Image (cartoon, rainbow, N blue to C red; front, side, top):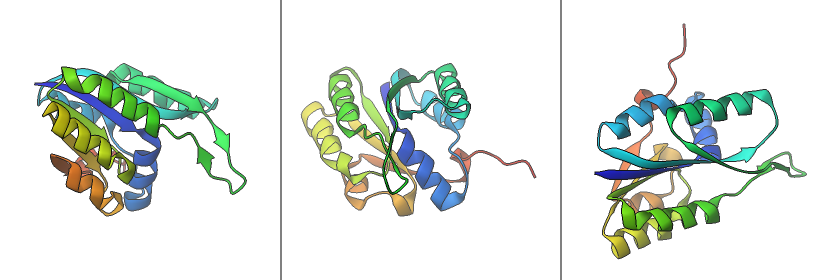
Length: 160
């Protein structure tokens, strides 16, 4: 089975922090997917910031096997950040879909529901979603071939 992975980094960061006060474990996730087939491509979409913590995080993702795609960091007047990757991620999924058996999306963003519907119906492939259950749009869950909840097994283990 050929698998392509697409990670909405900001969405996963904020939803796991809000729901679990914890961080997503990309190593555990990669191992879980790699056990199911061949990861042919893996993309992580993030906001480019010049601070050391972000650069270290991006280097860790690269070492795991992700290609990092960055957009400029834009600070809004309300203090939130903008770096919307919805269109870029969608284009990449549509470009990869004809060559894989499964796309795996890490996001809770309901904007991707039409994308999943399209790749499932046009290409006849599986479209899995990993997300925080209470913070993932129902429309996204409904369009996924399978929804896999992010739970304790995919969170960083804290030292006590």
